[in-house]
Length: 226
Image 1: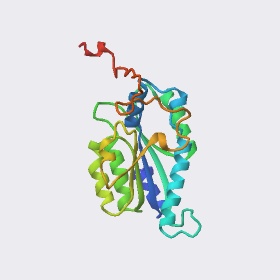
Image 2: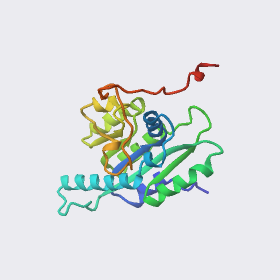
Image 3: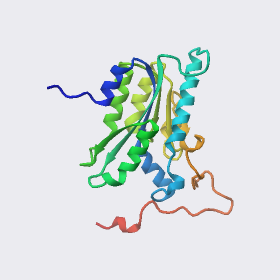
Image 4: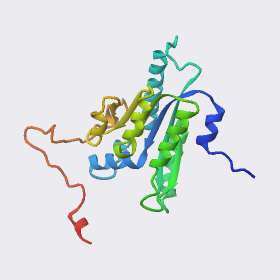
């Protein structure tokens, strides 16, 4: 008996439409947000994926207009697709399940992989997903939410060399590689309307108030002990 196809494989056979593909690197984005906040986000600082989805739909419409769509909506042959890639630490399934179900209810696919070792991350899975779309149905646009330049910079430049619009979503504090690469568009996550309920408490060395600011440590001194 043959194995049932994965979502990544089966959906490419179900629809021949080119994709405006959004890939969300949950471990990396969570780490970047935690660094800005100095800890785990409260409800006010958790990204709203419904707002991100509406932004993706608008971006798809923009690309459709660029392809001479008559009414500004996605014509046959171009579809938005969004997938969140995440690791699941053993024993955390009950905590993570409501978030995963909420994403799926909004319209996102979720690729979940158990975090069994330091090297069991989802970088390779995200790149495989991008390559599958690129070489089967094709990409009308690619959007990657991650600050991981080591994993993504060269593959994204290769996609951009095909003439495909490539956008990186992240936090400007952590994505200088995307900000300084002309072939890539950078969008700060906080600049997407409605993604955060409250402004992030961002203080950088290039945006200090006149009376100065306290910059909290990223980790406690006790972390230095063996």
